[in-house]
Length: 295
Ligand code: 6CS
Ligand code: FE
Image 1 (spheres, rainbow, N blue to C red):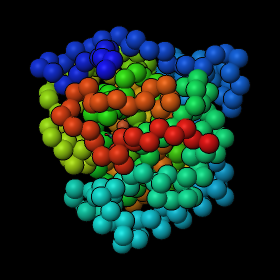
Image 2: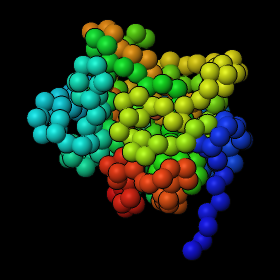
Image 3: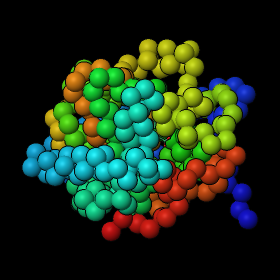
Image 4: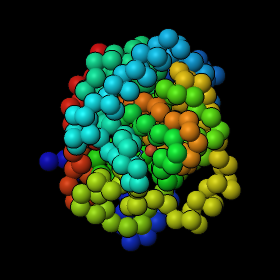
């Protein structure tokens, strides 16, 4: 039994920052793909890559229709893969959309999507997690500051930072309706959070994350050093971001939903092992255990 070194300790007694020990861009400059060398440099530096139009307006309509179908289906609410808003009890997120919907399965394997993931991660990739975030209007709650990798390492057992997310807007992301915010450059430091992972943490954390959230002091220091970038864009725009970016999003009190589809690609060279800082694994619909590469 090979023991895997924990490069990124977290969820102990105290908060501790360590430098990132993994590359951000895993491909080689010769790796061909949809992302240009200049864009790759920006991604390496900032931890994110905005794409103004990843899918066309006509295509967005197809995915919006599918999203509306999924959230209107009574079976969805009964499905453990859907999470409701704490206040309104409206559907907040539906996980594993790439499995429950052929339409979203096709989006995952679209070369404009999986091709960029393979280019960034320098290998074949599988889907670690997918979800639609509905973020309806009139008070949908946001997602507090966090690093996804901190959770995916601590609770899902991803050993290295060889994971990339893409958030594709299915409705217009205005400056006002709870868009994604990222601290540019924050991905170069891993912030290990204080506080043990409670059992069944996901039942709460997917509504309001607690374990794995940074202290006010750490956030103040990081925001002062990196600033905060808010992502806006038309439906069909997208943001690719490294798994270790410090990011979050605010509540949406406007009448305009901020719905997106969120796909997490992990390298097949970085398969999940046992959680590094949690008593048990999370369910497979949140942290995949099927490592079949996307074809
Ligand atoms: O716990 C997770 O895996 C999810 N939570 C958040 C707030 N972002 C990443 C991921 O979807
Ligand atoms: Fe996140």
